[in-house]
Image (cartoon, rainbow, N blue to C red; front, side, top):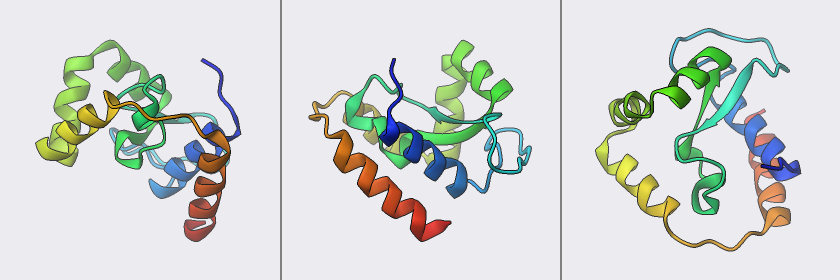
Length: 117
């Protein structure tokens, strides 16, 4: 799946929001680094949640791989971290149609990143 400039700025926003720290194991990284990922609970293929902050967490490479291989544990962790109501909303939003507008998403997340950086 192609990663564009909107994906890159959203990823940077999530990793900055999470203080360059893996949300699962707690390992902290010095920016900029590609060792810390923007991990989507519902994958980037779901346009409805591709740029939804509650659907994304900063995870190190190892934790990201682990959750990719263990979707049931990823689900349980999401519920533990965010609550069942938020997880249910993410799932509903992931399965709801949303038109692509990458320029809008790029501008929105660039502005949000500037607010927290």
